[in-house]
Image (tube, rainbow over all chains, first blue to last red; front, side, top):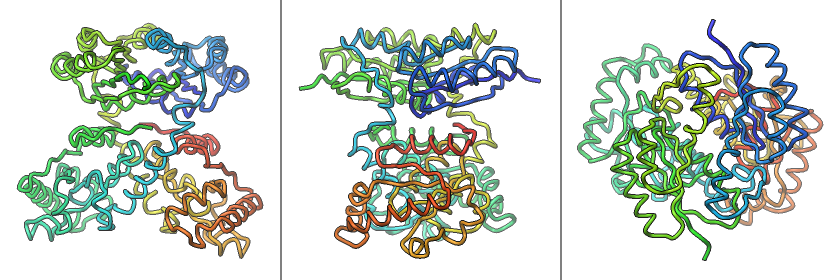
Length: 275
Length: 275
């Protein structure tokens, strides 16, 4: 049985940051498994006492190694109460606010929920607009306003275009359209007509034929669509089309959505709007 | 002129975590503006020297207060080189790996790109499946497999259902469908027929009539759809319908997508799968 220590992510906000950074840290320790509990919107010392301490103490009794708590709590008293739990408490704010205060020559506001919370209205509107845009322009869904796209992803069916477009929109407020490359394009040996005028916005996704086959096989088992030879040929055609047209591309096979999206942003030199 | 210090987010991975936590910290300092530069996939000391140092030093010369660098670099030498830049370097890994090593009684692997990178294949597949599900079940798009939904969001048109569903799918691998509540439902004073059997999966979004009007006005200016009185009535009807049916809901007016999504996860008591 692998060790299964309880890990808490406790935040006065959504807990997303605490969870992400805590995760990155824990993946550095191989072979361990953790039981994870996320507690968002813990907005003060009292709530730490009433909601968090009992759960941490229960975990403390239930398993041998004491729990680990990753937290992002702005409030100093809340952090102090959390420490009473007896768990290992690692607060991501505490460690950095002090050097930042010294560097910036001012006190921090100790205000809760400013990161994913109180938000710039215009930035937020842009983000929602990007989501709407990406939805409307998924899978070549619409040719309208394609000129407004920040990027147009191209690739064979199931190369990862849809999740990547949505992630670019949701996480970075980027208007990402996507357009499939289909057998007809390969026969004509040319990009879809509508894309010609937007060549500088195109970015390709490719994928290994074996992985493509696996994915397509789940969708339409034993069809021409998922046939190994067909997958191999589509990928080959798509890559040579992109090569001919001078379209940059990335291979999505072993990359996460986050990696694909951030690589594209870097390559097209688009400043990240962040949320 | 407000102070406009340069801030770098430097990571051996996507930089998303560094940027998120760096942001949370900086929002604690009011009235300051920062020029932000994100540099992802910086995978060793050499790349820090060739790619990062020149940009940091350029920023150092260009503006008075020295730059601030938030980093998540697993590699010890890479961090050491970064420190040669003379900027304030705050590395999120460095501070926490040591106490974690002590607590867990083992050494960390110092492996790059384990968080958003090399990923659990099954988890990843679930996530893509969730995205496909949420896309197919956006705006009541399909009644098929609704029973597979982890949650079905309901609310009037433009109350925030689509971005929330997509975020739940992309960020947490949650199968989130969404279904609009429309004037016909209000006339019948009943939920859409198909939703009756899934009552325990329903979660409502509501919004202030004023904000709803603003959003709809941008979409279809001066229409019945965006008319103030109509918006007021739709919201009122939707809320009383949800109240009658015992559907929990959240008001999206002043909340970010992250806040709405994490509140829903907490309320429906769904364990977060995280990426």
